[in-house]
Length: 283
Image (cartoon, rainbow, N blue to C red; front, side, top):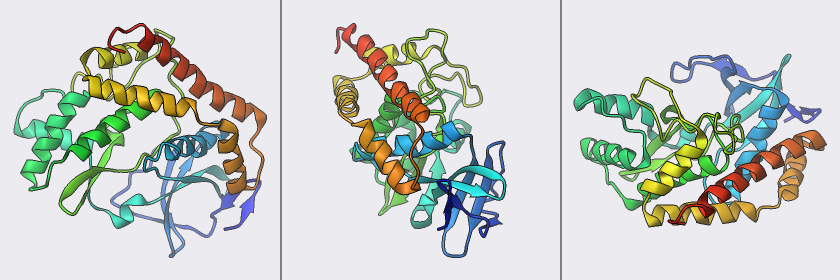
């Protein structure tokens, strides 16, 4: 694919109507060149580089992730993503699953990690799927990784599942533009939508630090040990290697200002979480 100043030129890609896609303020939609299908999102330069930086962090943790690339279509710049759903069956996001559950039972909120296990068990039973401990581990990983990397857009609509050989699984990690945007040490900074919401239709969240404190208070020792494990693994990642990998992909040097911002996002977040955990007797 032809590049210019690091960006793939996708002028030859044509828009398609994929699953009645609704275009948003930052999403152009799905495009194809007849060989492949890509999601094109219009983003500023910092958000675009987040979409390249954070997937590489997650990949170094040996977790499944959707890779992105810089892209330009006509006068619009942003990123393109692979369509992971092409080889998957029965795609369902957690938000739709929750609405279906509430129609059957009650308006009980299902946002905490513990409550979502109940939702997944119900969904498997209703659809004659096999519920396994692996799906619980995948749920826990998706919550923990997005806490550690400061995703302010952690919400049920951004968590998808698929079915493989009658087993339910979570989709790879995707949508990284708002990673690194939570400052744990700021008590006025909103926290994580997955852990706290009153009903499926509200988006009220308390400070991010309270999200972590609640998890440490109510999580099992096994769950807390997974949080500690991934915290240490992320600390060991060499950011220079990540930026070299991005340069190899885009054929352009990453601006020093971008490097500095992204590196500090992760380091400051991990330091703040580390401080909270050291002050907790369960850790």
